[in-house]
Length: 274
Image 1 (cartoon, rainbow, N blue to C red):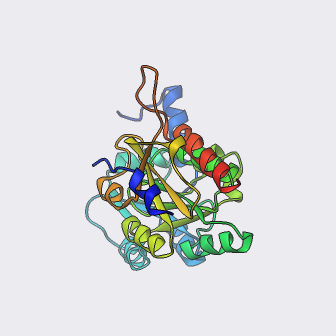
Image 2: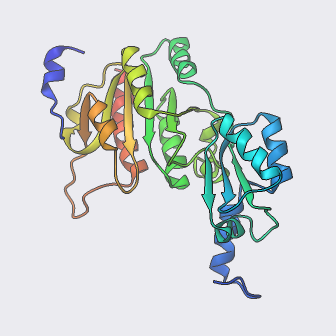
């Protein structure tokens, strides 16, 4: 990217009871979807080598087989999250969870290098999407659909404090999850440094930046979309080369993350093909 173009941009610094309400039943069904419930089931899941997004364990003293299972998960760098029994009860639909529930990935993750190879094999400039802390599965699924639809080569998500490739994400993507490479990384900031070394420019979608339609995206690039509540994190924003925004002319001051992504991603795709 020419220096004059780069200079153009400015950074902006109850109780269960016998009767359960219908809404509660729906919530329990959604939360249990994709869950692997109980110690024996989690043990077999670990043996299978399948990708695991995270494991929830009951807060308090641990004994018996759960100790060994947690140790194995930690050794494999699988996030282990302590929660109250009531949360496990709800996630399992009040099945016998034995103090442990795992959330298995809906598909296998790839590496950042795999995504770079996809771009090279297509003879195209690398085009990444980075999800910085998106926790709503419907938003992540919609973002995957947007990214695949505009021809992005892959999506990067963080291992912690974000939703993984759950069945709910798969459903929200309307099948697009099967066609888009997704990498799950331990350290998002370090991954961005890696992408920069590969010659990829980092664009963060945040308020107060340059208008996206005035932005030169004709380069190997990655678009960072932030979380629903807080947007792009401060550290990631600092690492971005450019901040880009969608001008808002109505009374609302922002779009939903997947809606905003669709607008900017379509412009990146247009420029990459012109």
